[in-house]
Amino acid sequence: MSPRPPAAAGRAEVLAALSLAIDLGLGQPMEHMLRAMLLGMRMAEQLGIGQEARGRIYYASLLAWIGCHADSFELAARFGDDIGFRADYYLIDAQGLPMLSLMLRRTGTELPPLRRAARRSRFVATANTAVRDLIRSHCVSAGQLATRVGLDPGLPAILGHAFERWDGKGLPAGRSGVEIPLEMRIAQLADTAEVFLRTAGAEAAVAMVRQRRGTQFDPELADLFCGHGAELTAGLLDGDPWPAALAAAPRDAALSEADMDAVLAAMGDFADLKSPWTAGHSRAVAFHAAAAAAECGLPDVDVGLLRRAGWVHDLGRMGVSNAIWDKEAELSSMERERLHMYPFLSERILGRVPGLRRVAALAGAHHERLDGSGYPRGLTGAELDAGQRILAAADYYQTSLEPRPHRPAAAPQEAGERLHAEVVTGRLDGRAVDAVLAAAGRGDPRRRSGPAGLTARELEVLALVCQGKNNRDIAAALFIAPKTARNHVEHIYEKTGSANRVSATIFALDHGLWDRSANRTESRE
Image (cartoon, rainbow, N blue to C red):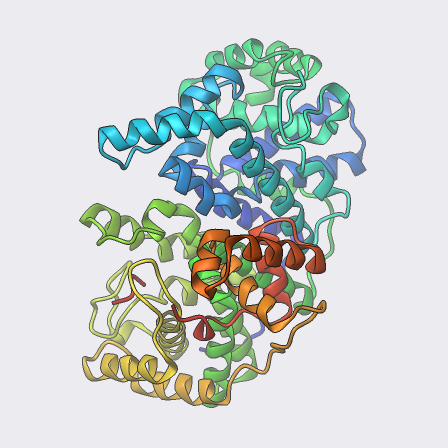
């Protein structure tokens, strides 16, 4: 590593990279949201919309689905493959029988026939409530995440309309017509039209928009697209949309170093929220990696780069279904192969931003091993520099401290022994391991007392909520009645201003309450 400062980057550039991670969670190829945004901006130009509103359309189109990953745990629990479900969602006019058919087709796919039929029968009885709760949770999460990455204060309210429909049959509020912000009406049409344009051609995209005119889509916008489809979509699928996307961006000033850190930390939380098993993981890895780099005497610039790489090393998680991340049984060879690609996805996402290319190289190698047995590229010691070795050790240590569906967490001493065993086998670097363990021994000084008037018992309950536990699970874990558990959860939400698991987790992270090593109940990472 060399002590050169990272290049400056604009907010639009960094958030365009974030949109690539969102694409993965939607079951779409990278650059889907970039092209959808360009289509939306072309529509805005045709409509003569002013610059300020165009800026909101830009970010609403890029990040319309920023909350999609946050309900992946719940979505996968109901419908199996969360990514596959979202990909199928684009293909239907999502209301009434088409939506119910999709949900039933996806319900219980992993179960034997009789149990699958029983699961589907139960789902039909609760479908409306279940879907409404999922979408309400999604909208809350989208607004919080938009705020955390520094978007305009008006954007969260716009993103909260992602599932509303022109005909009023959407969720969560059933708003209709011009009650839905114009920015979201444009983003909705452009998002879906891009999928049909790319997969079936311009005629299919126009036919889909015409069919959904006045139901899902604003009739005026539908008429604009159908009447000017050739002009609006010209060259949209040709080449790399990245340069055009940056050229269309609002003229934001370059991010300061502090602002860049804040956005990258928020992006790390974004990745971790995909599964309750990984909440807070990236923050902890960033702490261990930066502290270990300082322990090794690396320059301050390199310490900062490793901290940033720790925050965002898992962005590629979006490309792997929760059916894999949250699986208790042993993974199949195909599932393992899919999982082994996610560091490459992290590197590709981050590498689009010139000022983050060194961070990308660090993040992409955090599962590589000195003996060539790591992934995704099987690099060997001669190909791994000091920073990559430190990040690999920091990630391995923190992962060992965290429970996973298929194994319990390790105590710090046991995690340290595992690290030393990896050195003996020639997989991890001894100096990097010693630095990580020395830094870990000093501890993370984040505050872990009870803010917002939370009691000691409520802190225990909050930790279980963050792990995705329901009231029955919390009651069993703490030997209390389910009603008592429910009351604790309600009090926690009231005190912290939380509305769902994701916002409760964000509260815990922001107040230094999330410590996996304190929640113990062969790592896949």
